[in-house]
Each structure stands twice: as C-alpha cells, then as structure tokens.
Amino acid sequence: MKRLIATAYHEAAHAIAALEFQHKFDFVTIIPTTVTGFEILGQVGGLKLAKSISNKLETGLDISMPERVELKHLLIIKLAGGAAEKRLRNLKGFPKSATEDIRSSHQHSLRLFKGNYQLAKSYHENIRKEAINLVGRSDIWGKIESLAYRLMIDRSLRYDDCIRIE
Image 1 (cartoon, rainbow, N blue to C red):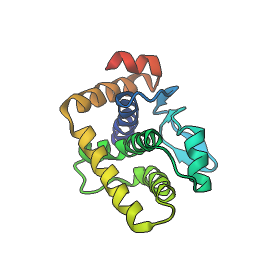
Image 2: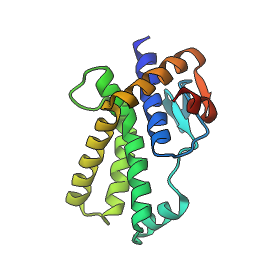
Image 3: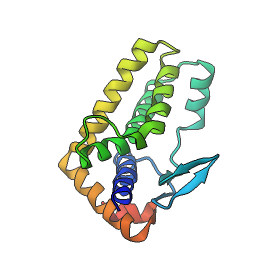
Image 4: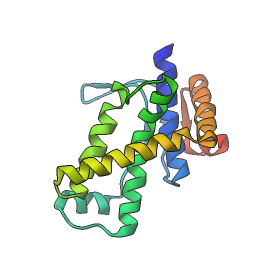
C-alpha cells in the first residue's frame, strides 16, 4: 500500500507540474507496466519535449530563449515526481524511484551546455531546487494530494479529468 501511495503522489506531481506550466499530456496512471524490460509503476503519457528542441539538443545547435524556458519547465516537471515523494516520505534526498527522471533531466542539461559538466551540474541542481519549491507550495501540494487520492481510486485519469481536479 505504501508503494501505491508513493507512486500516486509521484505521478500526480508530474501531472500537476505539467498543468502549472500549461504542458498538455494524454493521461496519468499508476497502473504498472513493463517497457523494454523495466517495470514502470506509473506514468504521465504523452508529455514530451518538442521535437524541434530535442533535435537541436541532439545535434548541438543552440536553442532560443523561449525554447530554453520550455526545456526548463519540462525538467522541473520531470523532477516534480521525485520532489513530491521526497516531501511525502520526509526523505533527505530524492527516492530511488526518481532515478530515471534524474538521469534523463541531467542528460538534457548536459546537452544544453554542450557537455560542460560543471555548468550542467549547477543548472540541474537549480532545476531540482525549483521542483522542490514548486511541490512545496501549499496550493500545488493540495492539488497533488487531491490528484493522488483520485489516482488511488481510479488508477488512470485523462488530461481533462486532471484539469477538473485543479
């Protein structure tokens, strides 16, 4: 039961952060699934970085300021799940369940700074703090709790259902 609750808060935080930054997604679920041999306890489906930004990062091209803002928001969304679990379970650091989100967001940070590890590390640490601050806001935490509760009942919700919870 503890695992289900933690997963519900984790996924709810991703979804609420996405709504906060006006990033559309398809659904949020806490139904476990296996993807390429890895068990995934939940997910927010359809939440992705714009292909144009992703392509520029992959090829080392510079991205514009609006694209940097979109990337920053997406990275905060990625880390919001771990930040919510950290708060829920009163942990010192992010939980192991956030490992893939951390790895992915750090990789995007490295690409943004063209492999400069120190700049990427500093940027990533600031993003992590912003995610912690976001889920620490009482209005956001209240929405996360409401959505997590709803997820524990329904297991999956569409984007439109999540908007109504706000």
